[in-house]
Length: 415
Image (cartoon, rainbow, N blue to C red):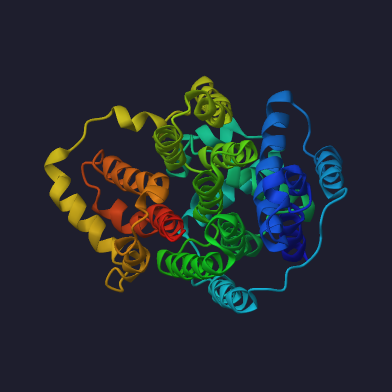
């Protein structure tokens, strides 16, 4: 029963996320995309709510947390278009095949990530029982490998689902992975369709689901932060690429980027690269600053919290020395992991459409982000004096970010 209630708590987040349907951009996409974006929005909303409650010393209960979530959902649902678009059944069926394979992978524990066991799960469990972000727990010396200052979005999402179920569920946490895969494919399809056409958007969404689903399996990301991270990243990049000149697309991107920054340490680098890319493409400094503002506020508050409680760790590593003498081997080892044991087929599948396109300018933003995130990955690896174990353990997960950016770039170049 606890597993079912935990999953119900996760799926319930679609409801408060319906408030995003008030954005004209979201109101125009198909229902599956609206539900997918609502799910991502709900995760961001409940995280922000618990985060604010933590600092305001408001207790985490079903009433204090659930009431505003329900109110937001009711507000978003008023006058909403619930008409189902039956077109694209074949592409939807193919996406569901990859989601089903991912469900099989997580329910048989084949895709379980060690990070779920060692820190994402214990943090979510502890935050739920403590009713707050427990700084004493995070700072305990023997828990160093839990990473003191990793951003709190995923543990807070798990804390919410635990609040619904009255306890943490390891199987429920694994279920987050296929839900995120389904949401990112449908969200991408909906955001791309007005720009590239419904037919192309459908098949690029299938490509996205295939690549990410395979990456989830071989990288073993079940229950870790990559699924929600990639969901927020794909929404942000797709919104800015296909509708970046629209104010509601900028609002959606700002929300998604703030969630990215609160999901993983690498998210801060992704946000910085995306903001620079958007500034280059849009040439609008004020507009770009407004997109970045929520990130600055939330990530800044988290770093300040970590500083006050002597928890800073990962965010200070960039100040350490770079081992440039290891560059060649680091690059070689990273490229080896990037093959995904299938001869770089995911990269070939995303780059092939770009190679024959004459409209690369339209894909400039995701191309800059893909190149920038690849470079930032190498940058982080070069700050370790022995990064080989780190590359082997993380590269196949981390490199999914530039891969999904290339899917967006290929779709944009096909306009």
